[in-house]
Image (cartoon, rainbow over all chains, first blue to last red; front, side):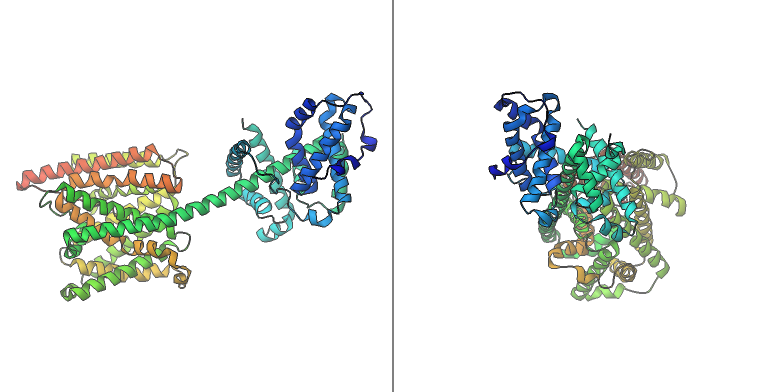
Length: 188
Length: 420
């Protein structure tokens, strides 16, 4: 991980006006990491489309939290973290010559570190839930989801292969995503 | 509220998904990243899209791994069961002698059980284990081959294999050829076309339904025979036959549950197959009075080979590799082994003992389906099969009593057995 990178990102106009004098305690940082770390990592992976860069950027974000988190208000701290993370990601993209190479990599690569037993158990439960949700999609929706996410085909290629308009392919994906979101949110 | 936040949730999800997939146009990308600067809803949509994509990718890869694992397991198991089946066949052959084949085949095809000449539970159990194993090998072979060749192609192999075996038998015993003649060809044709249809139905059903459902529905064959005999052969419908039929119908209803969401239309294919088996069995019963077993079986394979080949890709044989050798042997020879073992079982125990042992096929195949193919153990299939077999046994018992009263002879009544 390059800790030096963390300090170089700036908040510029996004900084919160409220600025208490003391830095956040390690307990608060740990608690924020536990609460938002995973969601932030996924967000960063979506922005950077690279899991190892996302992990580095996440570290930089929390370094920034330690350094300047006390300047943010507690009630908007989640949004503050995401904003910082986004700026860090943009800085990474500009600085690290990530460019097209990163864009070509898929966003859903696994994390660099192997998952723990607990993470794997939770992951398996989630996989089962997703499998069940996928089963409930209409076949044509399931096909689009599979082709786009598992086979990593672009919507243009999918539309051509299935001989359907691009809008139809996007429409099916849109419906499928909403159904999956609804079904997965319904799960306990 | 930004333009992005004014969109519907579904549009936002799709936009976030297209963003992480790198499929936004330059203008859309700039606009969306501007949203990410300010909109927490947009950021969370991105996180959610990544989460969902990862989960789906993992779920799909698990699915592929599972299918591959099942395929590997099935392939391994087909070897294991193939070896088991060959062992059972070898034991059976050593116990009884190969000259029993034509007689055994005839008795089964005609639906007339061989008299239990000398009851011997151990030998009966041995022969029945051979029967059960052969049935299971046939079903597993179909599953092992289903992704490579279709039902017609499997049955082409079976017909060709049957012809080879019969020719080998004819070479060993040239006297068998003397019984082969062009006689009653209309009836031969009816029998063989019905048998052809039933085999295709059975094979297709094995690929579509849980094993246990197929095997349970096979037990309706005696009920169909009874019904057809009453309708077309002028046999009388008495109280015991009516009760047996009612039990079979009840069993079928319990298994199929028409109108219920668990109803599987593919089960109707197996029911049609059972009806066709029954027609073939009745035709065999007529034929066997004038034709030899060898002749009936030879005409069957000769007529069915072109019928099966007509539904096959002429080049299907090139799709088969060495890894499928045992399932192919299973398909080619399981039918004959079933005939052989089942009829020999009837030598050592009458139908009242053999049928309940044959019924063990249902739980046995259900267990195999559950262990290796992830099939559910369905209590309704067991309940329905129990009713059907109860009907068959009730009829057997009543017929045996009637026969004893009329002829004063210990009789094992005709029993048309479920066919493979």
